[in-house]
Every structure is written in structure tokens, then in C-alpha cells.
Image (cartoon, rainbow, N blue to C red; front, side, top):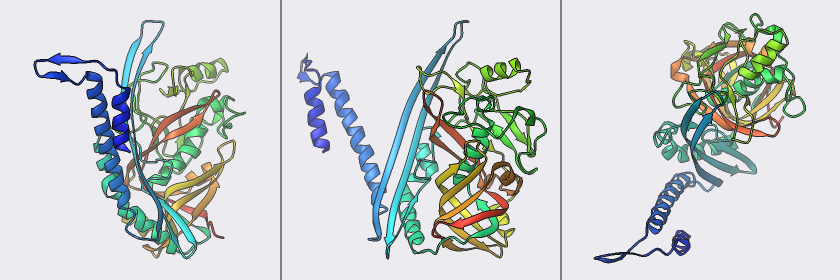
Length: 406
């Protein structure tokens, strides 16, 4: 196939002859085509090698390795003389394997089937993701899931790892705190919010362990920037401090609208547009939970009976971003403060603020991971944009957990 690509590309290149004392040399266009094909071949070979690492066991019936790279340049010119340019380089790797054992089929991914490991940077992103070595691990965990019993059901402690915390933050903190939703926008498309303007400054959104920051300055995180698409300089601000709701995700336009209603709501630099032909609207950027002081061993050790869950698989939440039900790829029972058997199809449900008030343990920096999603949808006309979420492992008390086979 690569040979055919090479031939077709050279045939399509303009026929520009250049002469030298050595005779005819390749045109610049032909040289660029050859270099492009060589780079494509190198990338495909790398993907093939990673994918081959998943296929050592015949119980793996399907697998894939993907690598998505994006170079983006943006220039914002304003009527009052502003002229600002920003560049982003983004790398999104993933490995997925599906196992089938005695009629049971389970899929495991490196960081979520919807590309949860997304960062800014170059080849160092692959190193941070463990991309080159992830094939065998993902395949083995897919087989373990196919052999595992269903997740137990009942009210119990829940330990969420960062690749599921990402989704929990996104749906039950990020979207509810978008100020345009709170002011009434989005109701006929993506829903409203259970948060009302009078809650800011005193409402207990979570336990005293919950500290949530809007942090567009972390270099490797997916939605870092120097200023938003209204030209407001980026600045790290706490949205929730010690569980108390302080400020919304509202940019300059939404803040002005709020003032017109007599509301004094302080916002953040958060308006973004997916393209030049869309208006900037309030969006999550980097929305993170600040690390606590508990090691992973301490979080596990504090649980008498519960489940650890990793990697989002499914999500459902009502129009006001309040009642939710989420499923994960990977579960593991915790019994007597120790990790026990792997379980398949783990799920849990709750109500946003009630859930965050049950937060009983926050992992330290050693459990903290930088994740994200390139697929956050909102707005009319629709806009899909990239969002960053970073979090430590977190323990919750008294959560309604259930197995998908129940």
C-alpha cells in the first residue's frame, strides 16, 4: 500500500525539471512528497508494532493502536488594536483490545475508548502515556475482565482513579458551572444547570476536601492557553474551595450579562470557539481537582468493602447535570483495606452535589494524572472543543454501585 501511495504521490507532483552539472534533480515538490511518505511509513510501522503487542493471545479477537497529532495556530485581532497569536501541538495516543472467553466479551483501553489521555507536546507525550509498552498490558487486562465475575451491587465505598475522575469532573462540576447555562442558554440543546446564581459564595458543593481550580497555565494540559478567545488573559482561579462554590465558568460576555441582571458574579478567562466561524462561548478549559495528602495505599486501606474503578466507558446525566449514572471499563474489589479480585462492568450512580459531599479521601501528588478529552460538545451551531482535566485518585463514601450484568 505504501508503495502505491509513493507512486501516486510522485505522479501527482508537478513536473518541474531542474538542471545542474549532475543532470536532472528532483523538484522541491517531489522531495516533499518523498519525505512525507517516509514519515507516514514510520508512523504506521510504530502503530503496527504497538498493535502487535496486543495480539500474543488468541483470546484477543480485536485490537487497535491509534495516534492522533494536531498542530494548531490561532491569531486573534480585535477592533481596539489587540493582536495575539497562540500555537498548540497536541498528541493523543491510544491502545484498545477486545477479548472473548467462553462467550463473554470485554474491551479494555489504555486511557478510554474516547481518547482520555490527551496532552500538549511532542514525542514526550508518548513516553508519559507509556504508549510503546501498553499493548501487552491492555490485552492482559481485557482477558482478565472476560474471566472476571460481575461487579457487586449495593451501597459501598468507591475509589475512582484519575481516568474516571476526568469524566466525573467534566459532567458533574464542569457543565453545571458554565455561566451561560446558569443564565438560561443551552436549554434546548445541551441542557441547563441545577446551579443557580444565588448559590455562589456559600453553597456547599462538596466536602471540605474538595478544591477545584480553573488552571489554563499547566503547559502539558490539553486546554492550556495564554488568553481566551475574548482576549482575557489566562489566570488560575479556584472555583470551589474547601467544598464551597466560589465562582462560575463565565467569560467576559456572560459576566456582563449577569451584571445586567443585577448579579455580581466573578468569572474566569474561559470563552473559546472551535473555529473562526463560531462565536466564543463559556467552555471548560483545564478544570482540575487539587491533590490532597493521601497515598494510594492509604486510600485503599481506609476502605472496608468497596470497589476501585478505572477508565470511563459510559455516561448518562440529566438535563440539569444533577442525577447521573456512569460506567467504567475496569473494576477491582477492595476488601478489608486490600485490593482483591477484578470485576467486570462496574457502574455507579448518584446526584452531583450529594456525591461530592461524600468525598472522604483525596490522593496526593503521586496519584495525580493529567487527562482530557477532545470531544466536548456544546452550543448552537454545535461546537466540539478540547478540554483538560487533571485529578488525583479520590475516595467516596456510601455510593450506589452496581454491576452491568445484574
